[in-house]
Length: 372
Image 1 (cartoon, helix red, strand yellow):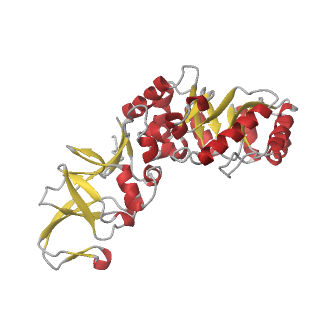
Image 2 (image 1 turned 90 degrees about the horizontal axis):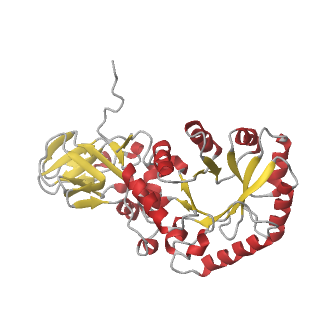
Image 3 (image 1 turned 120 degrees about the horizontal axis):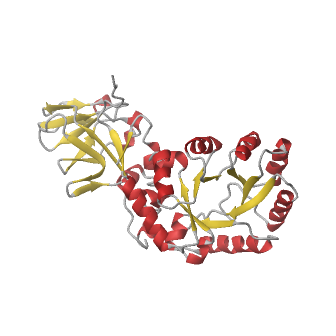
């Protein structure tokens, strides 16, 4: 007997056609010889890494980028042939696995490389991408001397190969280009100092690829947030070279509807008290699902109409102030479109005083991802 695994009506719906559209639009925007690196870290920004990666590869992505070795292991188990790049720092004891499974690692210091040499000789030659810290201030070589020393150490070993070099721009999504231009200049200086240019030079994150000088796309672009239909910032959003389609929507259903009389309250702390008779709907989603308590007051959609979340959001349930009595089972859209109305991740981000990147990442694994 088949057992249903998702009984709650709360679910995130991931539109893979939207992701394909965004990738294909980027493919047309950049030159044919420029590769697309699909960034699927953090479970593909909360969208589901395996399904997104399948779509990205089918749409022409040449490489997958993740943040951690564990993410790389998960991707390699599902994708045997695609190039996988770990963008962040990895412990040296991951190197034998990376070598055996043809996973590309980021190298960012001579200290890391000396530690890596403890595991030589390797089963296969390990490809490395040098991270140049041009102003982000996280990991990477920050001077040309450091770069040359690191390059020399790699070149002197038969186990390692410099497959690429990259940097990350801190302010590519902002209108003021002063800091961005300084990073560009420094990265170009780094490139000119290399004894030979590696196979892949990549500096363009999403904002750079969509809103900056096309010459900065080099050999590959790293397509992250806008692959999922979200703009890195309002500045970039106003300069998009093609329309992007959001891929993530979040919905649930009414599980209970009750009439509240004037003077009656709802939820922990009785923070909402009805000033007049009204209808309250209960929905099965709460802060354990990623809908944190600061979202009280955020609007949802029901029958295409806006309704506010009232009272304190609970761990597993929330309450909404209904415009009228609706039937149990009526669909409630928390993020997405319903009829002529839409609630966006930017709406949630504005409410939470954060960025849209954070929203899909905090929707917990308890909310199933359903793909269409």
